[in-house]
Amino acid sequence: MKELSLNILDIAMNSVKAGADTIKIILTETGDIFKMSVEDNGCGMKEDFLKTVTDPFSTTRTTRKVGMGIPLLKLAAEQTGGSLSIKSRHESEYPENHGTVTEAVFNKNTVDFTPLGDVISTVVTLIQGSPGIRWIFSHKTPKGEVSLDTDELKAILGDVPLNNPEVLTWIGDYLKEAYEEIK
Amino acid sequence: MTVKELCGKCGFSAVTLPQEDREIKGCYIGDLLSWVMGRAQEDNVWITIMSNINIVAVASLADVSCVVLAEGVTLEDDVRKTAEAKGVNILSSPLPSYETAKAVWENI
Image (cartoon, rainbow over all chains, first blue to last red):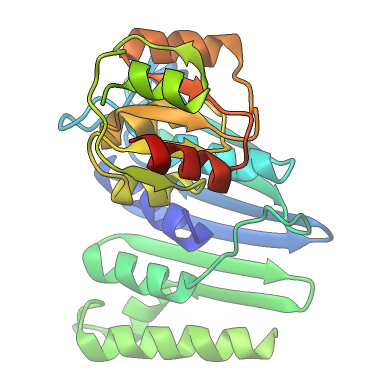
């Protein structure tokens, strides 16, 4: 994909489909490394399925025989000399602490590094689409951190839903300002 | 024109031709796989320098008639085997993408 933010959207949508009620999107930049991880408490994947997710010919989609989200993210990471790892605990074996962690590591100083792109739109789109989920977003760089936790917003908003258009606009503006501060 | 005929006329070499009699219609060039997925048309010749297993899946999804690996790019054997099993034709061209496309255009 042209932007990593689209990969984040894709991976997070998998977490939504897995029935997660908390999804953490954590971006960490240190030195040459850009790390993105999406952590959820969804139903998780069984070991034999987990082994096939990086295979472009396997998917949970029934409309076609290939699923490209994870294979393309893996390729994007490996093109920079990085890697992709997925750890998952299926609810059948871990009824109390199931879920999936997808982590991609990139060397951000190689020419083949895919730019992050518009991650603010990704976060706003995810909240808009699934306002019932607790979204935790954090982007740490050597200059500081941008973070958002929708549970903290809910505590302030009271009865106003997270997908209220004014709230979504506010979230977008808040993130933009926070990014300005760590520029 | 079929993929097999194109291969001979353009001086490409066959990497795997499980469906050599597929008809060709037009051509698409691209290396960003997600981009190609949404833009290559059915029966196109798809020219790329990528050689990862994902090209087989993208070729299959976009239903192109064949993939032409430009610049003499080679495939790992397991990628070639997967292409064969999935019915994806793959050719190889020693030329860069632009010259490869020219050869396709002149012969198609």
